[in-house]
Length: 321
Image (tube, rainbow, N blue to C red; front, top):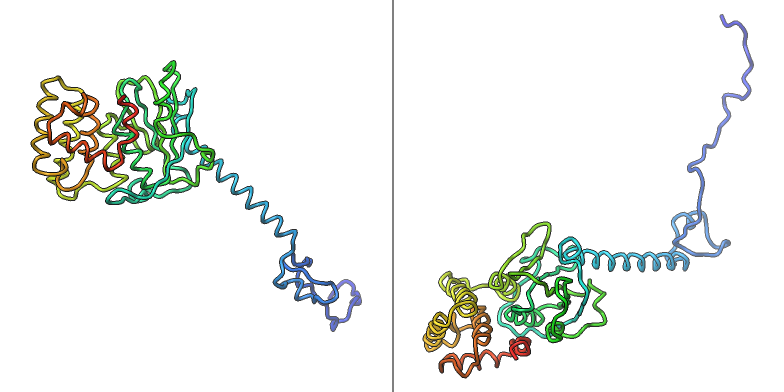
């Protein structure tokens, strides 16, 4: 039995209306008059957007666009800032874009990986005493295939370079800071190095050394190598012959290579058969570097004129004078 009893304050039949939400806010996605908008309309809104919200959204889009540009610029510069090539004192940036003029195409995403927002930048260190004519020709061909942002730098290990080397990739472009509008970056750094080097992905790829190897890499961005193993081997053989015997060999070796070129060009219009290939690019540049075209055999002279008619070798001519 209880010690004492207290009468109930409320009767047992009292009903209490509990709230369904803590508080209500006006819908910011819709705008309507206070008299013509019901409670349901304030919560679920109409179709007209508040101008203040539109301004906020536009401001956020602009901020995100600027952040995207900054990220692309920083990612592109990382290839030089995180390497010994960061000390630069002269810069020339150019844009090149032309219609596709080379037979065969290649897909950048399949060759270099999917573009995740940063410009895919190819960085090349070259010695001005030995200008890489083959790479200048391949750069011009890349510009026929892709939208390329090109830049030329001078490393502090050099006191200066000739003016034609600073402009070898074309004039500076005013929109070079908008990096995300380009498909590929091509950065040439004149530096006192014993051998040409190329760096593409610092995290996933070691540097590529030698003009012949870099030329193979760049050419695959333009067109695939021959699917026939025999033709692919023939192309590689002529590329090695051009750089190791024509460009760096003795006078006797150069004479033997010119005779071999004359014999091969007597059978086919191009060095690797009926189609123009990397073998023709490499041998053309190395032949002209070794001496005047008038001293070459007849078939070689005819082949040199055929190469010039293609229009790819214009960037190499100023450096041969």
